[in-house]
Image 1 (cartoon, helix red, strand yellow):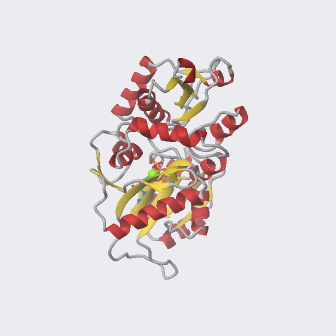
Image 2 (cartoon, helix red, strand yellow; image 1 turned 30 degrees about the vertical axis):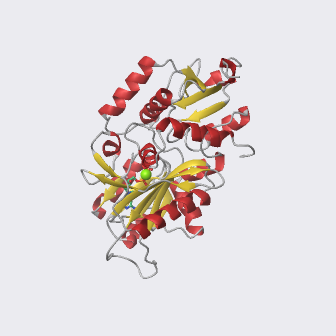
Image 3 (cartoon, helix red, strand yellow; image 1 turned 135 degrees about the horizontal axis):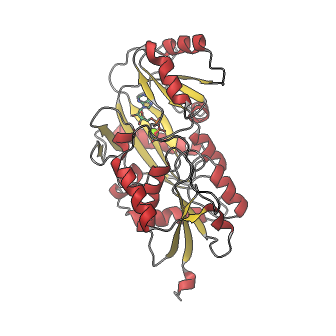
Length: 363
Ligand SMILES: Nc1ncnc2c1ncn2[C@@H]1O[C@H](COP(=O)(O)OP(=O)(O)OP(=O)(O)O)[C@@H](O)[C@H]1O
Ligand SMILES: [Mg+2]
């Protein structure tokens, strides 16, 4: 019998307080619009608000992007989002939470821990995998221990009193310029700089530390940028490999969210053995960090000769940059594109993520 009581009650958790609040509202809107109403009773929750407090965000991207702002305005105007504490109200308690949050306090295990305490099943990875993948410094250590090639890097903490300037400058020089300076726990390329001239290394670190006091300085890898989405719990599968070609050369915040600013080519124009290897690596990275449900691994394919390779550094063709446990779900996002290329519609993708969340004995 199919009656209204058989519908699953689904809360879409979105917004939040991270630097990627607006991107999350855009992902959330796309999800709210696509969830199959014949199967689900759906409502949106703005995790950045409680009944007695409106949203306060961490510092955002330096430049706003029109498409993201438009999505934010549109979702706030057309969907009434409930405050976070509604999850404790028996009238709203969901059967499953679809997490459409990105960045700190959303993708990093905190909301996952809260949902564990409330005993509400949720999409995506659990507490530990979320926390690990959000922290690039820690994730690289775990993946490297599992034999997954990652770019060489140095990491350090900026204290209130500053950081060890001499040590960092020396270690960066040893990596060889250009280097990439990143806040450890951030996404959407926010706070990140490619540094070609050692003279501006400190400026780049000052920028990154606005977002996180843990900093990663990484060798810059010239190559073809790939991203591989993975779906599943116990037997994860890799979706078609996407090649990313930003028109302006750097895959920054603007290039990620402005329609048309980046060409996403599926399948990637790479040899078949590189495709299989990229898919194998994405599954290995997903498994290494203990992800569940979904992930998207960013990879650089370094082909041809490489200069500046230190003697001790083994030569690989593919390097894992990072694993995203809650990939973007905006209209220009990559996981939905990869799913589409595999014949999985956006609303079917959401069904799958919900099925994975409800799979017995997952946590
Ligand atoms: N070591 C590197 N060598 C070359 N390019 C890099 C390197 N690290 C980062 N990049 C470039 O910067 C972009 C963002 O880097 P990364 O994926 O590590 O950060 P992010 O902000 O967490 O991204 P996301 O939005 O996927 O969460 C990459 O997609 C790539 O274009
Ligand atoms: Mg990335």
